[in-house]
Length: 333
Image (cartoon, rainbow, N blue to C red; front, side):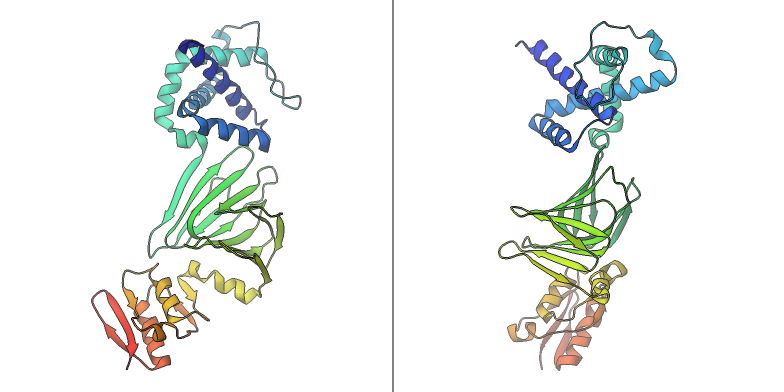
C-alpha cells in the first residue's frame, strides 16, 4: 500500500469512528475498541481529531443551511451496526469529502484551537500539599481531592471515567443510567450510576473503597464484582486477602473528615500520625526514638496544625517537645 493509500485508509477509518461517536451509537465494547485504536498510533489520534473537528464544522454548516452547497455522492460508508440509527448517505459522504479537501485544513486549525485533550474530554486534576480541592464535573458530579492526590477525568459518550493515580478522593456522582461512572485505582475498578463514596490509594498500592450513599460495584483484578452499599468498606491490599466490613455512620463520617480540614488519628501510632501530617504541612513532626514512634494516639485534629497535635501528644504521653524552624521534635524527657 502506497503512502497516499495508507493516509486515505487512515482518514476513512477515522471518519467512520467519528460518525459513530457523533451519532452516539458506541456500546462499551465499541468504546474499548476505539480507545485501543487511538492508543495504537499517534497518527490515529490525529486523524480522529481531524474527523471530529470536521464533523463539528459540518454540523454548524448544516444549522446555517450551507450543506446545500456540498456535493452529493452516490455511494456511502458501510453501516456500522444493525442497531445504529441510519445516517443519510448524503450527510455521510459529505463528511468524507470534507475530510479530504478544504475541511482538512479547517479541521487542523480547529484542532489547534480546541486541543486534542478537549476533543477527547480528558482532564487532569491535582491537589497540592496542604490543600483540599473540590471540582464540579461537566455532568453535575463533583470530586473532592485530598492533599497530594492526582486523577485523570475523561467524559465519554457512553461512560464517565476517572483514573486515580495517587491519593484519596471523594466522589459525589450525578445519576445518569446511560453513562456509568467508572473509577480505576490500581488494580481496582469501581462502577456506579449515582452515589457518594470515598477511594483511597496508598503509596503501597492498597485500595480502600468506602460507600457513603447508594450502591457501588467494585471489582479487583482477577475477582468477581462485589456490590457494596452504604456503610460498606472494602480493602484490596497490594498482596493478601481482600477484606469487607460494615462501618457505622460515625465511622464513615470520620473517614471523610479531611474534606473539612480535619483527620481522625484514633488508633494510629505517633509515627503514622507524623506521616499523615507530612501530606499537609512542610513543618515536619520528627520522632527519632522507635519506642516513642510506636505510641498510640487518639482524637480528631486539624490537618493544618502539626504543632498543636504534637503538643497534645507530648502532654498525653509525657514527652518532650522541641521546636525547630521547620519541625517539631518529640522525644523522651
